[in-house]
Image (cartoon, rainbow, N blue to C red; front, side, top):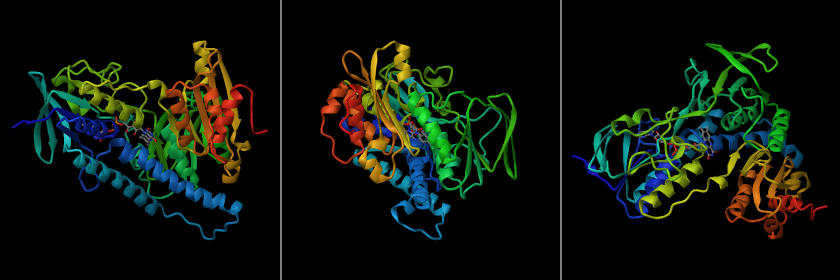
Length: 475
Ligand SMILES: Cc1cc2nc3c(=O)[nH]c(=O)nc-3n(C[C@H](O)[C@H](O)[C@H](O)COP(=O)(O)OP(=O)(O)OC[C@H]3O[C@@H](n4cnc5c(N)ncnc54)[C@H](O)[C@@H]3O)c2cc1C
């Protein structure tokens, strides 16, 4: 017999589980279905983000950063370390524990908010009298129905044509987070966020890392000045980054992986590595959903077509997160999930795409919100810019981490903040001030006039805002 709910959410990643909880809080009866399995075959809600994305990558970045500090920076503080070693198995086990704590936390929140969880694959069966029948295939088979369905099935790593992930030698983000010993040489194809973060983890542990990127420009999505600074700093750290390459044959053997490629200068090259991470983008997960059964519209890349409110072409069917257009970010998925639950309840859920922050958790960290200088130029917007280096910030000096700067871009006529770009320590935390300011349509002068704690990295934000009007308090 059909189990009936007001709302069925398919997928328990950050888009799905947040939507399910918000819908339950708004008084709906809610089912959430997710197929992710932990190593014991049990449920592991949290999606890519919790299991093989945001959370485990940050756990490994933290461990490797501690090792890097102990190896290279403790001595500056007078701390001597003898016999430093790295137990990779322990680092990975700690990461697994952090993941499990998050999986358990979501199951707890489902219980607390009375969301009924089903472990298995959900697929559309039919639409009848305004309700959708959904089949769940798992240990037990279930049939569910609801008038409102939120699809939040996320995305998976894109493989290079003809080179499948074996997760031994050729790794997706999943295998990259499970490497059991420090490789001597690691290749990364794709100098995007995931490639840079994963490359950084292993570079800090002593691996020789080479990143091959097809595009001729580095981090084209970031502000040009930030991208230039990042390329310089990563190079100094020992990350080899080759731009404008064309990947050829990839061969795996017992010894590792051999990548043939053509360099930007047109020379034939080959890269021999122990492991190869392929991080060239992600594809929407719609294969298992059986969208044809109900006529759910997909685009040419397999993503679900939605409007600005996350409505699909079917009444009562919504889609959020990586499976739809827009940046593939956990917090974007969460915001859409909340907004859709509120829209179903007749409220005015809202997502402001203009103030979604972007973060790359390398060291230095990179974070930004709003438009880049090159976008403003292309859009013909008259703007003013202000920049302040961490080198002149007391807290950064005390931390021993003075790389990078904060950059403000403000409207030339109104002084409204149009973009804030940070490369430096704790950029991921500092960017929130800019997000709040932009959400309230603040001017750079507003930030310049707000009292910031001393000594703090946020004083660099205030100084960058002051610099927009060619002022400073620091020199
Ligand atoms: C290595 C890495 C690092 C990242 N780091 C960050 C970061 O620091 N910050 C950030 O914002 N983003 C980061 N991301 C991106 C982030 O993980 C995604 O944007 C986010 O997980 C998308 O959330 P989602 O809910 O749309 O989908 P997902 O998290 O992919 O969740 C979808 C869920 O649906 C399930 N599912 C799919 N099909 C079905 C079906 N038919 N039936 C039942 N269940 C199904 C899947 O098993 C999965 O559990 C990272 C990604 C990677 C790979």
